[in-house]
Length: 357
Image 1 (tube, rainbow, N blue to C red):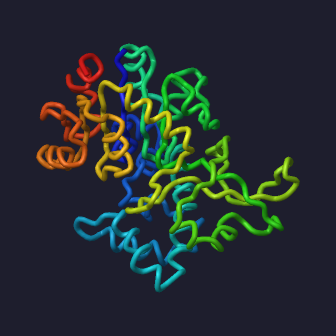
Image 2 (cartoon, rainbow, N blue to C red; image 1 turned 135 degrees about the vertical axis):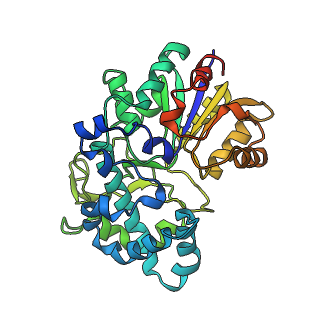
């Protein structure tokens, strides 16, 4: 049976909803909470209120905003340089990077709640999956937001429950969140008093958390996106106050374990790669090396037809990159869309992906 593997990067979330005057009129949150690319996450004009909740990173944000304004700036390179070259001589940087995790969880929770619109491009894809693949597919979603999950929850009339991590891999449509999600948390840690919040508690271990692989399991039930806070919670079974660290990965290079999801999710992903007969990549500009290694390993010698949706990247650059890094992917010039997600779904090549592979 035909089976698609669909890989979503930041460009997919940013363009999952076509910008137009109708939607802006109906929902004034569209422009303010539109999902940003990584270079835009400190947009003070749009995210002022969220940034104000995290004053401990004000100086860090000021420097990052300046760095991101330069030509060809790359946020992943900026953070990696901080970790590798600046933090060893200034250990406060580790605390700043840890605080960034809390900010990202807060930011993308707001986006998940306020940028969501019921009729969107994800719903379009889910409809096609029902029509051509008997409702079965695997999404690899690198976005921290829950826009895809909310779309799937509505599409399945609530049978997909994104508050349960088990449901991500037990449904007909699998969603593998390699970099975690804004409402995911690691297993709770006990604290002696409810006067200490999660940011304060984990800052004590910031160097270890930033430099070492976190092998802790993710709590099986996710937080509600409408009640994100980092205050202590009383755990009835433990009979004490607890705090949780957001389970999402910073965009850093050269980390030993470059994923944030339980090993059971990675095991399912490997099965899905072997099962896939076609791949669609949307908005995945900075290709995750861990995912490329998985593709290379699990595909083996098998070649697979691949369609790529990008923006501001030439076909020549795309061909060259995947020729070197993932030679199993068969990419034809007609299967590269350079105009983004919303334009891609209007094309014949979009329909051909589902009907022909």
